[in-house]
Length: 524
Image 1 (cartoon, helix red, strand yellow):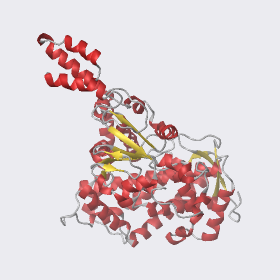
Image 2 (cartoon, one colour):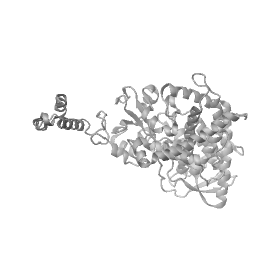
Image 3 (cartoon, helix red, strand yellow):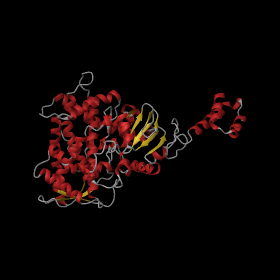
Image 4 (cartoon, one colour):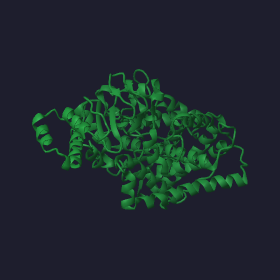
């Protein structure tokens, strides 16, 4: 009791209030008074930040006692989170902070120098952490995207070996051409009918079918009947949306139990996991007899750090992690590129320049790995879309040892460093006064953008292994469809909204009209 009085005496610093409390303090009411004093102490200590977090002198939105900024985050729709980050930067600058129950203190710093420090220079001081890993486990399992330390290091080494195999590179390039031709033939039927089509839906089907071939040696069949829902893809999308919202829900396990979401998650998880395990077990039983190895076979042929073959669970987690990287991100980046290139405010010469490059590089030939590497304007169009609409619009790491950023900001162990590639891509201090414009030509001006200025593919030791893979896939389909068709947005005057998820889908798709092009011209 006496210690409680001493604490309150020091914390309150208010003799009038304290004297009134102390005069009412007697043995009969000691427990209640001690509890009241403790509550008062906590309310004073955490008067505008969440319990368990330190107070800082950094700018940021004012919080409530004990829960900090919980309501600000919890009641901001997931499809407005990136806009919230923009608004916070406009008010507080590129460095600000908030706290919330269940997550703790987050320090947002949208600065390339600080990002290089976190992702590269002091890499081992920042991890994905248990909170992120647990919230994502139903989708990512124990795979590379949630892993830290030695477990991550081993998986990274294993995966980097696969992506550097020349035969795998050539195999994937052939798959991309094959699947792109299926898309082009489908678009031909749309042009013939004169109907509209959701180009994002088609691109998601294209990347999933492509990744099915690359991963398992078999297509998911999404493009066999584009109107039909693929059970695996639908379950995968629902899981993605659910797990990515958990970081903003506080006690998400309780909330999901109360709302019945936990049962839906379990059902979707079973669909996704069973699909992957069935293919893995079938491969183990029947072997692999094709001349070029797919991703699964390359993984099966590897050994773990103890020289043992990989378990079915490790294989399953590895494949599912690469599906979210290889399917969602590329399709969404292409979808936003289609929007940016065809919106009413965009210079029409951009599409003309792209078609001219396709004609100059390909002529009448099909795209190859080598030809795609030559198509620098196509790459610039894709990267410019990723700058404005990054496939992973926000990211965070937990600090595992006290650190000081290059801008002098202290981050304590257990606190989160967060950055927003979305906000950074629109920052005039980073990209100049025309930062919000879609301008592929900027990729040919001055020095090449550093990975921490353009963090769409991450940076440092965790730099995306599939950057080249995704770029070649995107340029391949761009080569084939822009060579044969022209596109018109159904609504070219309004920006589409983005959906909830780890990545950045267009919320309601992107309907377009498709028309065949005269094969002898590149005019728009």
